[in-house]
Image 1 (cartoon, protein in one colour):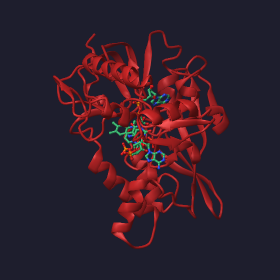
Image 2 (image 1 turned 90 degrees about the vertical axis):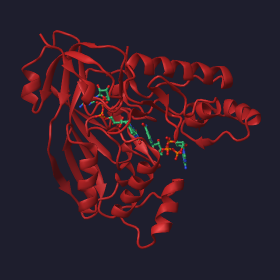
Image 3 (image 1 turned 45 degrees about the vertical axis):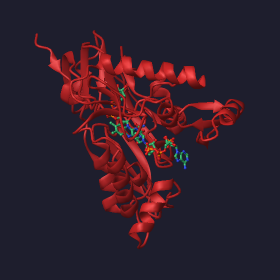
Image 4 (image 1 turned 180 degrees about the horizontal axis):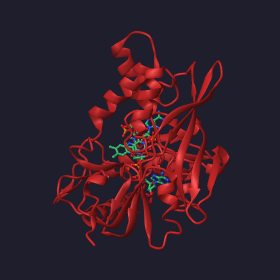
Length: 331
Ligand code: FAD
Ligand code: NAP
């Protein structure tokens, strides 16, 4: 049987194939396949994945569509979107309707269904802040289960679907609670500056446009240069560790976090270790943001992974901090 190319189905754009492929447009497409008898992988927009070799199994490509309002109050609206909707299409829908909550998450690549997996976040907002519940199919039993916010165990770029339930459920719908009277979050450095330059009254659309403009100026467009966004998570460290590092590296940016920890900038650590703009063959570290590893054209997933490990080792040697990949790496 001919293998299926995944080159165009993930944003790193590395040459990689899968044994078989099935688009899931409705739940019956999935139920017909259960119980799954071979290794499988759920694919959304492929914007948070690195394949280091061919995938010898079945790719389940989520394409469940639909955006609908489940209910609304005077101040809020509960919106359910199919997991296969493009995240930016949902953002555009919310912006056009003037519903607030996800405007800071504008232009994050990928699908709605993957958004809860790593609790997507940007510009001071995380998905969990607007999340109401999701529906997911248990891939062993075929039963649909509802997960509220507590059940998802959201954390910084993390959820139960990256931990105990990794690969066990296919998320089919996500319901967000958006606001008709949004409280805008413009505290994240660059947003404020762009809005001030633009002038005029604050709105969902204005913030979304500002975020899009900042992102377009700083981040590689997956259509032009392969990447999966930030390759590593920002490390969350105990206060004492941050204090020692700060004493030795006074310019180290440190941000507040939860559970008595502080957040370090992984991009800064990689940059200071001398990696920004580095290139070996077609595998590289993005010249405008050291946290982003890129495929300049023909790099294989293995070459990107070798680079990631070299970056990781060098940061650990220099700062004693082990960077954890944010990207889902298939070894
Ligand atoms: P995929 O890469 O297809 O899948 C990611 C993981 O989720 C895989 O483990 C997959 O098996 C699983 N999965 C996917 N869909 C489902 C489903 N329906 N049910 C169960 N499991 C599923 N992320 C941020 O948080 N903030 C950012 O600002 C951000 N910026 C980015 C910028 C660029 C240029 C790029 C390339 C990436 C960026 N990312 C960012 C990472 C990425 O866009 C997000 O993680 C996004 O949510 C991934 O969506 P996806 O559909 O592409 O997921
Ligand atoms: P940036 O604004 O240059 O900031 C660098 C890092 O410092 C970010 O990782 C950010 O952490 C942290 N930071 C900056 N200001 C902060 C503040 N006021 N409070 C708390 N933390 C702060 O980063 P960037 O690369 O241009 O990205 C901008 C936003 O888009 C960030 O939120 C980033 O997470 C998101 N983004 C994510 C990805 C991805 O793949 N995950 C890719 C591109 C951009 P946080 O990352 O925790 O915000």
